[in-house]
Amino acid sequence: MLEETKQVLKKILITSAIALGLLIPLMGQAIAAPADANAAITNAQTSADTAFMLMAAALVLLMTPGLAFFYGGFVRSRNILNTLMMSFVLMAIVGVTWILWGYSLAFAPGLPFIGGLQWFGLNGVSPADTANYLPRLAYETGLANDKVLTSYAPTIPHQAFMIYQAMFAIITPALISGAIVERISFTAYSLFVLLWSTLIYSPLAHMVWAKGGFLGLAGGLGALDFAGGTVVHISSGVSALVAAYILGPRKTYPDRLAPPHNVPFILLGAGLLWFGWFGFNAGSALASGSLATVAFVATNTGAAAAALTWLILEKVLRGKPTAVGAATGAVAGLVGITPAAGFVTPLAAILIGSITAFACFYAVTLKAKLQFDDSLDTFPVHGVGGTVGAILTGVFATTEVNAAGKDGLLRGNPSQVVTQIIAVIVAYIVAAVGTFILMKILEATVGLRLKPDAEIQGMDINEHGEEGYNEEFGGERLTVPGE
Image 1 (cartoon, one colour):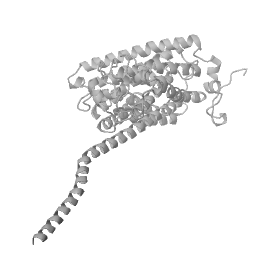
Image 2 (spheres, helix red, strand yellow; image 1 turned 60 degrees about the vertical axis):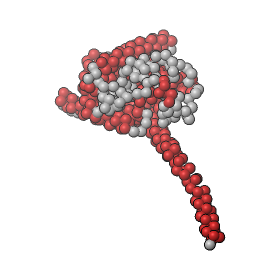
Image 3 (cartoon, helix red, strand yellow; image 1 turned 180 degrees about the vertical axis):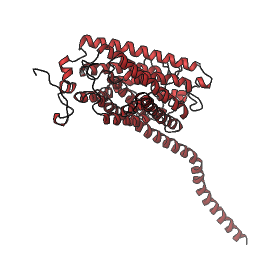
Image 4 (cartoon, one colour; image 1 turned 120 degrees about the horizontal axis):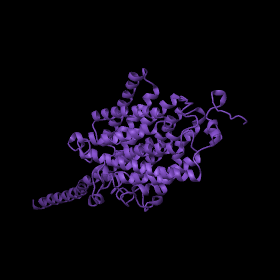
């Protein structure tokens, strides 16, 4: 009996040991499971946000050829290639300079007015690094002090942020071309945009978006500019105005004005701009989530309200709503909602789009009466639209939409309107003074314009040695007597 009891106890001990041996690894796995799950969630969020940002960057790049078609439809057919090239060439010029020095001057730590050169050639900007840059992420998330910044790891690679910002730097100087098409030398224009993107765009981007910048939320004045009302639209619009003034009017202006040569191009360009603008504004959330959704909805709503407002104004005041008016109104609404996209409600977006369209409509009308040759209404749309949008951001912004922002006038904070106006004034001064100096330097060195006969004959054949349309299919190339 005793021997049988011993055997039973022995079997129980052996069975218990085996069970314990199996249980211990399972317990270890159970303990490790939460950590592994958290890592998996983090990796999934990083992948999702990175994919979102790369797609947003591609959408913003698409806006540049979209702008080329938008502008190209307005000009005479003998200048179509030159107009397209004035946008397309920015993808080449800034595509290189942004890597070499533009990104560093815009976002590297430095002075309140400009970044340093420690990121020259993307030195230290690793594709695997997501923790050490945080210039604009501080602004987007409200993390504004060094202690928090060093412990916060964003979910997108540094190089993803860099290339996204490159697309902004590409399209911004391209906007200026609308005011000076059909008369500026392509060489002078190329040198101008090279210098402008370096000496005007990068400092403004640093002041508004970089950590410690003079105007922005991340340690600066506290101006709200979600996706570029001051940095992109005011700067390009004001620079366009100054450049057009220095360059002078086209030889055929205002006596021989020509209608747009290809209205379908204008609608195509506006459609591509509207589509790409979702990357422009929603992508400025820098992550896929609720803030990107807010900006996406506001973008579409503002553009739609502006296009509708422009068509109503045309119908009431001129008798007929036009395709060109619909396209121009949509672009004006997109400009106006850009600084506000991540800070306002959809109802506010309707008001911003409509008010901006109203202001731009009358700005275009006034420009025509003054007979100022801003060829494609760059200042009335981008300069005026950006100004109105920036100020209205200070009116309608609410922290209920974005806790990292600020409340505006309608939420009991009238000082935000004052802050927005200060930011607008600074952007005007930087863009106007900088552009005046650059244009005068180029005028005194390489010259700005073609000879009058070459300008009348057409920019395409004289600047590029080719034509956009074969003459037998409706081209309108002019020949100069004695040619």
